[in-house]
Length: 399
Image (cartoon, rainbow, N blue to C red; front, side, top):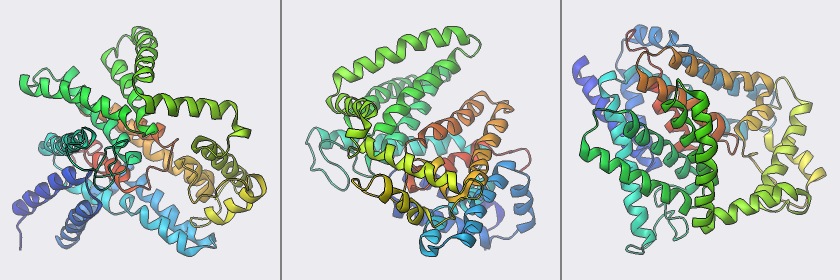
């Protein structure tokens, strides 16, 4: 039987593996997660664990968010799909509390370094694919050289990593010179990758990262920060627009669709607009409690075949707020937003500037990101959210 000291060392090793595998593999990360959860449930000291969990408003709000999905099965017709959605949300019910209980303050930087090491590895492999030094494999193509995961998930994660690295370059006065130059080079390389691929959501978040970093750097000079952003953001947009064909083509298509939606419903942006408009009609008819956890498809199709039969149907409106609104109504939306509210509230009271800034950035990042897809349902992005939340919002004095 492992004693407390050995168990903690085991947990920390597993967490480092999890941080590294997070942006690389579903199977590897899930294997580590399974080991961690089994160890946690078998290690006793349950009263202390329960007290630690119930003392966190963030954890309570996360658990309630999951339980609403479970309760939403009571008025759903498609139980199978409802169970499918509920299973995807289990991170908020089990994994988040488990990770919260075992993360260690002295290992936080190591978790971050392990995560960044995986991003660096991905970058190296991506460039090897792009320069045709190795054959594209798994998800990689010459247009989207992201081998380990799809560009849809990778680009937002890449934007998140760019924020962490850029923050350390700007604010960490004790950063080693070699690490400083490595980070600067990495930011340039990652920025190039961001616009080389077709992940539109990540590209939007890239500009958000620049905005947040500028506001944090000029935190006591907000007017100056805004004036600088009014110059930086348009300038960087124009540079990327004229430098990357994929970015300019998709930007043009998006703008063209917005102004000519009725004639361009079959484009990717047109479909997403249709998904949103049709879903909002469903929400209006089931405003308070939604249609149930599993009935998005059933209820959406009723509106879809009436309004937009010329385009494909969907199982997901590609917007987390709209999906939750359809499934669980205003009750579900309030529950979701409460998670972000308590994260921000906790961070604003944090005396550690880096952890405070990271803690503010994470919910704001996801609140905007989820306008473009249901990123708390996807393995990689939901795990990113839960893993970083487990130590950014932990009261280490209590534990």
